[in-house]
Length: 247
Length: 306
Image (cartoon, rainbow over all chains, first blue to last red; front, top):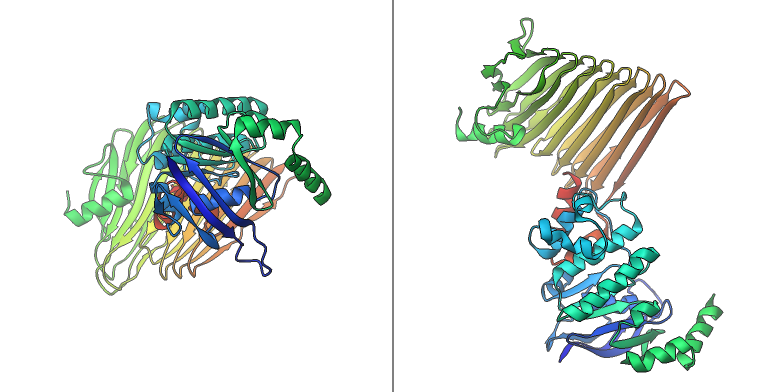
């Protein structure tokens, strides 16, 4: 069953004077209970697409359909209530708000005892963290893990994780892939992960390759992963070539 | 003990519901309406001026003193001098605070001067809440002064909170911190509409290894104005840290001037000051959890002042 459908999405930031389109006529469908990984070079439009799904950015044109309903004009909060979740690449900090309170807000009920177990899943001891403030005393890696825990606690229909591996250490990364494996196996949800990591790519049912604001390729992992990893396909060479050229 | 209005004011400023445990003194509209001393804590009327002396015997541990002040009359200007003598090696909680309910059109004002002499090795936690309410146009004014002397090894924590409804406040805090003594001041202020709040501090680190930590968190909304002017001096080997953190909204004004002066090469003094609006990212993050923009803003502000 189709869960989310993006139809001819164009996006140009309002603040630019020249017309630089970050997303150029992007269309794709995401189905129930599937695990998607979006990959591709930096600046290709991956994070922008994620923010368009959550409603943080409004598309310049195009339509977003969730379960058959047009949600293009719905706010972030309204989409959140419909079961869309988004994990920030760089989560903000909050002075005075504790990890436990943030989880309670995410779950819309109080996080006590086993309610805080989502912290366990991301390798943090609830006892140590539930009462800590989400402020600058937390490291970048801790913050990322807490961010993932808040998303896990929400039980969304579809969750987009924006580069969950960015800024976390090797140990946490291996734990992270376990978490995604668990999400994929155990739950009736759709997961979209933006990632450059082979181990995450391997978890995917489908891989979406984005480059220069368009979806270059979307297909079953078995077909696409081999191509990307072996570097035998043109997009990877092309991508790398362009990345190097730009640097 | 009183009517509903009084009970509400007392609950707001002293978290009290009914008669408190331990020693207490309740002042209403300029006169004492209830008092109790205990075996270890004596409260007595000053003879030369309005106010009370609170005398805590040396070695008193785990006891509390509640001294709320409420004003429900319009046009009342109340001035009070309270002196706290905290005996050596005692450990007490003091809950002060003032609530004004002014339905009239004349101003109501309470100026409280609290003088603390904290003996060797004593510990004090002092909580002071200020609150104003009422429908009238009469101003609600609170001007507290807190003067502290910390003797060797004393530890004092002050929590001073003014959340709502006080039209004008001028706060002055002065401390002399002795050898190995530690003072922590947490000040939380929210102003709105046309209110103004000023807080000045003169802190002297006098004894060797004395330390001070000052944390000021404030939110200025509407057209309110706030000024923070903490001054910290290190006269010997000591440590001091001042942190002013303000969220500014609407058309408010916030001025923060943390000042540190060292008179000794081993005085370690740090100040930090930041004023800014709520980060857009924070609002967006909470909205992605299903909160409306308004709820997200309130959640952030509530956390900030917690």
